[in-house]
Image (cartoon, rainbow, N blue to C red; front, side, top):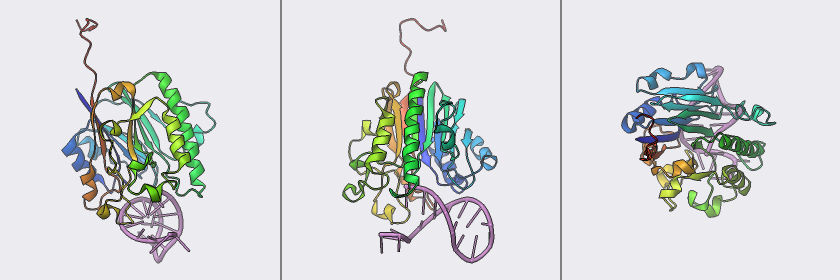
Amino acid sequence: MALRIATWNVNSVRTRLDQVGAWLRAEAPEVLCLQETKVADELFPHAAFEALGYQAVISGQKAYNGVAILSRLPIEDVQVGFAALLPDDPGAEGLGEQKRVISASIEGVRVLNLYVPNGSALTSEKYPYKLEWLACLGRYLEAQEAEGEPLAMVGDFNIALESRDIHDPERLSGGIMASDPERQALTAALGDRLGDVFRVFEPESGHWSWWDYRTGAWDRDTGWRIDHIYLSEDLLACATGCVIHKRVRGNEQPSDHVPVVVHLAWPPEEAADGDDDGW
DNA sequence: ATGCCTCTGTCACAGAGA
């Protein structure tokens, strides 16, 4: 069986509804995680996705942020925010005001969809917020690991972890989305639990998931790779590919991000040693 | 380069994004 999990920061799900629909019809992944839906829950366009065979679970707010998981397969155990797994955490509750985290179990995989704060600038008060958020993510992942479920953590991370993830590392390293503190915070949160599946298949630079609207970045192909898919070891072993759907950035009125899709051979083949209780 | 473009909310811009 194939399980394809996609992530896409759509920069408004309502403005991009036709494009997302067209992409789902063409690609038909089992799961699509959206970020920056920018819509209150009561206005989310459920019907358009249901018509394409997708159920949506959502955590949105007016105008800003917002995440959703769309799935053709049954969705179980939906959690919103970090607080569900961190009931006594000093930071988790307050960080939940911005709708950036949703998770659910699909086909025995814990799918965690994140919209990591951008931070704006190193001098902004939003930058320490980003670092606090990443520290809380680390505590969340520690708690999630104790659950023992295979984990696929996807989303817009707003961080390029390495030089090869930026078109001009000499100029951009050290700035927002490429500073040492945020890179270290994400690396610490990952621990040895999770691996960036795109890098299993592609070691080279020049592969981007986001092109700035403002700088003519698409025309010059001056992008960043900030949309990531991190898998636990059991899922990494089942990954057969990871693809960035670059062409979508050339659409009319595009999002500034494009979809990233991981292909998994999942569930793994039953061991042929007679533990099949179906017989 | 304090910009560039795009989106939301609300109705001429302000604020946010990355």
